[in-house]
Image (cartoon, rainbow, N blue to C red):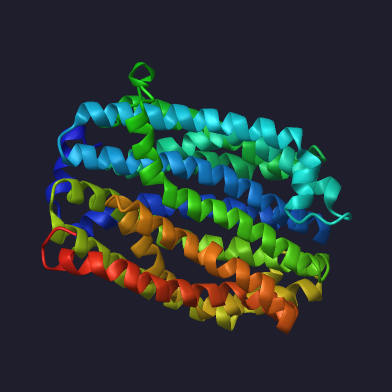
Amino acid sequence: MAGPAAALRDLRAAPVRRLILRLALPTIASMLISAFYNVADAWFVGRLGTASVAAVGVGFPAMAVIQATGFFFGHGSGNTLARMLGAGDRHGARRMAAVGVVCSALAGCLIAALGLAFLGPLAVAMGATPTILPEARAYLAFVLLGAPALCASLTLNNQLRFQGKAALAMVGIVAGAALNCALDPLFIFVFGWGVGGAAAATALSKLAGCLLLWRLDRRAAVVPVRLRAFAPTRAALREVARGGAPSLFRQGLACVAMAALNHAAAAYGDAALAGMSIVTRLTQFVGSALVGLGQGFQPVCAFAYGARLWRRVYEGFRFLCQAGAGFLLAVAALCWAWAPEVVALFQTGDAQVVAVGAAALRWQMATLALSAWIVPCNMMMQAIGKPVRASLLAASRQGLFFLPAVALLPCWFGLGGVVAAQAAADVLAAALALPLTLPTLLPLRRGEAA
């Protein structure tokens, strides 16, 4: 295990491509495994029937809100402490680590309390139909109980990554995902808890992963979290907000977008809602690999920017775009060719679910490779401390473009408009990223300050 001094030395001087891959591979593995247990959830819940699959889809926006909170504090504190380490300010980095984790856990407690107090209206707001409302309530209740642990674990995970400790960050995620996959069949089928059992397994696994990450952080982080360093000054909170706002926009709007998608699909029946739920999980699984690669780039980018190594930032960005495009094009071709067969793996033989899901999956795959430009642009702006542009990029895909698309396209094309809405948003978000990113990227390419 590399010590703190070696981790900082690598962030400053190791070859960029090799360093990004070394940091990204554990992150990709953890994200794929995390996404895998979402897919495993879908498979186990799929044995219960179409209504149960749809209920899990309704619970996805709540999970997105919790994740948005964890990423807000994790990316906000992580980006800032990485730049502080690059500038040699360890005291400030230590304070930022404590502020991020404590505030994240407190925010998770607030989400849980409010969500449980308004559980029924919350389920309806997220797209539950009368036929799936009881199962949606059961799923949401356990998801909300796990909110404090999930928020804190995501913050710890991201802080470790930004300190060059991606392998350690992976351990907590992998352990939680493995426990989740083991508990799913036990709670769903043996205990007979149904769809609520899937959520209970998720909540317990997140708690176990959080406790493990806390122990690893105290033993091996460059600036481990110490509660006595907790000093929520206005300046510290402002830096967290600046660094975390793009993640909050991205994840928060993903919640709103998923709720809007659920409402749009529910107008065409539970089968349409179930089909869109399956595709949402599958595309998140695929996208997690690109996000994992980007999260290997972010600590390199933030540290190099803090150390005024401008060309190093550009080299990492270019590699991220090239590697992401190659991977996504390959995946898109395979999923396009076998779309019905892929969707059929996650339901119990309902031909209408397969038809809707296959059409939606093919539309998603048609524009999937554009993420290899959109995601790196957003991540670079966030890592180097450009919050306005980063937030606008984060908001564009799911907010500025997807929400109008999913509201308007079904009026003209019916269910076809629902399944095509995300593809339309991808095209428009990629176009917007050009004027927002190039003025910053081109000076970095020349080795100048952005």
